[in-house]
Image (cartoon, rainbow, N blue to C red; front, side):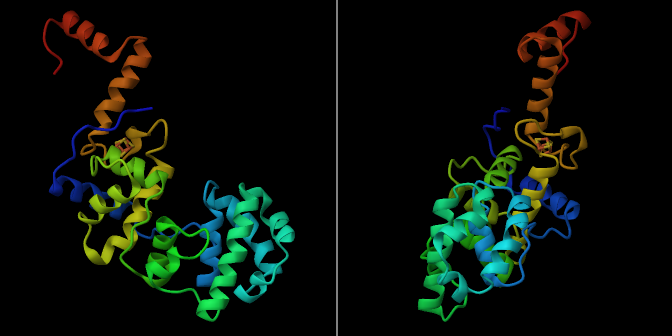
Length: 246
Ligand code: SF4
């Protein structure tokens, strides 16, 4: 795994990096398929430790059987487990989505609440899930930090934070308020397409001139190619040419 930079870039530098990502992914939207706040909420709960593609294959069958919060609240748990089995952690997720539907029916008339506190009180809903729902459905200035956002923000030197909440706090300071809800998508799409774990495709990256991880990744690649540790490879090159390579 490529180590993260040890220093943060400056505020202006970070903003320039994010502006490039914004231009690169101008129409970024969630990859989860949904047609209502309820279906998005359930899809996001199912997406924990699971790909969006897998969730999109699962939810049509789930919502065909249980199209509303009322229907899901009255569902037979074992039938729900069968329908979502391929999403992983299906027992816990089935319990969470049925209980979340019951809470929606009981406390909110079957509607998905639009404030963070109420969302995070629902079973299976943490800060990240609430942020996705708030930003995608309600257009709120919320930034969900998943594994891609965490990694890309670190590689770009936008943060040194060790927790998703810390990363969120650092990144939102760099983004104009009205664009915060889009920043999650810039970072997540970049993480999926280019800045992959464990090996980022820096040669194809539009941010490489600014990214503090690009030289780190390049040194590691050279070390792998020569079979030498990066420092040793550098020393050998310097000796061969008789001058510093910088
Ligand atoms: S230059 Fe490399 S490490 Fe930096 S953001 Fe691009 S792909 Fe990721």
